[in-house]
Image (tube, rainbow, N blue to C red; front, side, top):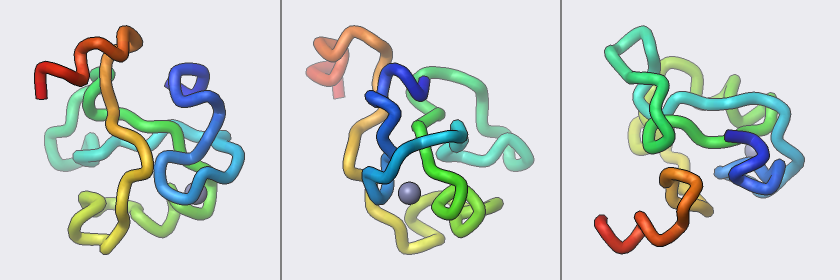
Length: 74
Ligand SMILES: [Zn+2]
């Protein structure tokens, strides 16, 4: 996932070192391409156990399967 997102944090574009679950695993989020996004440590901590909307965080990337053509399905 980190490589898919070019090692950029999905929230602030800093260098990503962690993988964030958009819907946290503790709340039923699954480990899929669409539910994961590369994130830097501070953003991952800040988001914590919330969804990006709850944390007031905005995506700079849209999570997708590695083939970017799948974005068209949204
Ligand atoms: Zn970040």
